[in-house]
Image 1 (cartoon, rainbow, N blue to C red):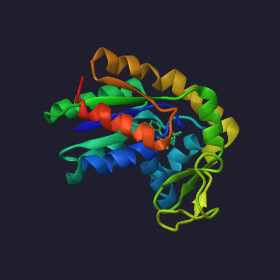
Image 2 (cartoon, protein in one colour):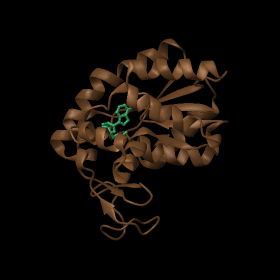
Image 3 (tube, rainbow, N blue to C red):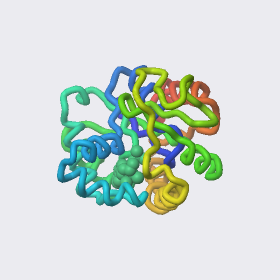
Image 4 (cartoon, helix red, strand yellow):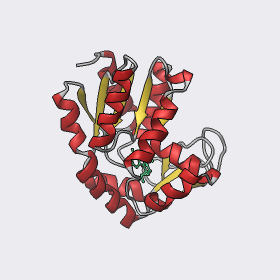
Length: 217
Ligand code: AMP
């Protein structure tokens, strides 16, 4: 199954996509993680992407689409994938449809995580991420047992530069303008299911699994 997880920054896409991917036995492909890897490795793509990421803006479509499509060509993605953070623009969505169509594949389901803006801002501005396994914590809503240390793998926790409050607000604006229109794009194609993301991690996880087991709409 090829699933797109849609939703604003801070909706819990990363956390949920990673557990859904384990549940379904398919890779979790997160465009933000691919960019952060490129930045860490200091590649030419990473250098270009950092400029946009630090400002809370979208990396240009051509760079983003080429990077994600290359990842989708890896053998582990042949039978399914959970896409997290991609597509984020109309151009990315149409490129993805075209490429998949060309190899006899398609997106089967789009899950949209809905969370109110005020909740998103408080979630984003207290977020800590594990440097090693990328697991997300929140200093108030979901703190690690030991401050600064990941419960899952013992890795160091850090705050993403683009999670500062002003950048978080900017990312939400960018989301509204460029990504929210994709909700209608996928609704018109009868692929969309809405899931309430303003619940506990476990409740959201169950709601997503239910939406997947009910199959494509
Ligand atoms: P994320 O971890 O998904 O919040 O992504 C972090 C940052 O990476 C975003 O704020 C963008 O700068 C960049 N990024 C990730 N995915 C995309 C995408 N599909 N299109 C453009 N930029 C992206």
